[in-house]
Amino acid sequence: MVGSSIYIDEGRTAVKLLAEKRIDPTPLITSRVPLKDAAALGFEALLNNKDGNVKVLLTVP
Image 1 (cartoon, rainbow, N blue to C red):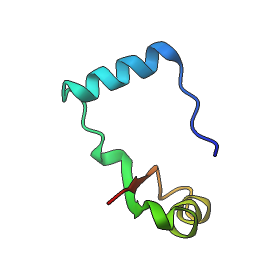
Image 2: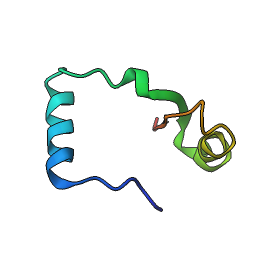
Image 3: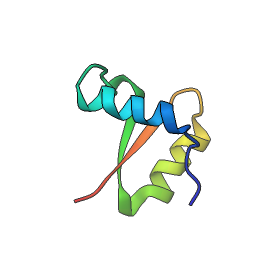
């Protein structure tokens, strides 16, 4: 599986800001898809609608 690249300092800063609730990530999450449907719904959504999707959040039960 291929993920997003993230630099060490920026990643730590982002996680800290999220943990402190200083930034709200919800505007970036454009879809929520169950993990079992990741390929069929999540990745296809990103590929077919690049302008309308920022981040697809995979959910687990």
